[in-house]
Length: 263
Image (cartoon, rainbow, N blue to C red):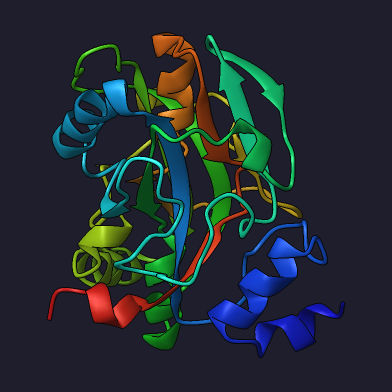
């Protein structure tokens, strides 16, 4: 399937491709303008603590939908979607260990599973490009920024990093992204990556970008909370089971980013 053809599809059409296994790679650039979502699925007994964790750390875990126990359909953002099959690729954790990265998690789904859909900062990138903000993305990184714990969930924030051409571009980025709170809102840090524990900006440890060239002299580094954060907490919490997306392999929802933005 040609990527240019897939870009023209509606979210529902794309999800059918993922459901049948015809698309199992990254979703960046697909269905422009629509919200893409990170996924975290936990057993019901941990769901309140996880909800509280997301509330306390909303810039990394900005919720856009939560399902009823056992229900794989996110009724607020994509009621026809099936969270067991409609992402291109998943990750499965047991007791904090990664055991599988399948294209379908039906065999792991249980009647007590609660799914949390977490916004993605790709949602505001389209608005920044439309405003001719000059930037480039370097990838997703672990940091030393502590998260506010809740129940068994704790750890450090994951972030996405972007470099901006000028101070004007950086200011516009703050203004624009602040409107998109369901997609992580404003940056959590502006400054040198070493200050938040990132030692090598050219080799992102969570989700690297290709063709990263050296940082230019006046580029301004800015960092946003990242929806991969829940996967890091799963390792710390050692839940008996947790399902998630593979980085960059997102659920494409029926909601436009501008529908969820603050006017």
